[in-house]
Image (tube, rainbow, N blue to C red; front, side, top):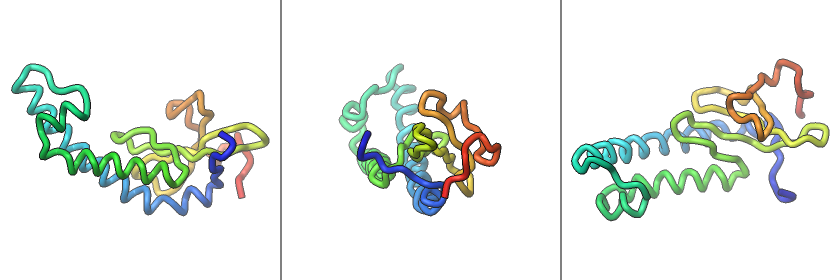
Length: 137
C-alpha cells in the first residue's frame, strides 16, 4: 500500500509498552471466550463457529469479544499488523533498499529484534543483528 506506514526499529520499539498492554488485554479476553466456547462445545457436542453465534448463545461474552476487537483495531490504527492472539505477534512494515520487509515482535520480547519477508512469516524470522539487513535508523 502506498500510504502504509514504514517503521524504523526505534519507531517499533517505542510502541512496545502500548502493545504489551493491548496484547495482554486481548489474551485475557480470549481466555474468557475460549473457556466459554469449550464449555458450550462440551454441552452441545460442538461449539458455535461465528462471533454472532457465540454472542447469540452467550451475550455475557460481548464485553470480552468487544475488548478483543477494540484492541486489535487499536494495534492496526498504529500502522502495525496484528498477526495472532495466542503468540501475541505484531509486524511492523518497513522497506529496506526498496524491498518490503516486516519487523517482527512477539509478546514477551522486550524489543524488536527480528524481521522477515511478507511471504516467510513468523517461521522465517531472522535476527536483525545477523547483518542480513542493514541497520535502520
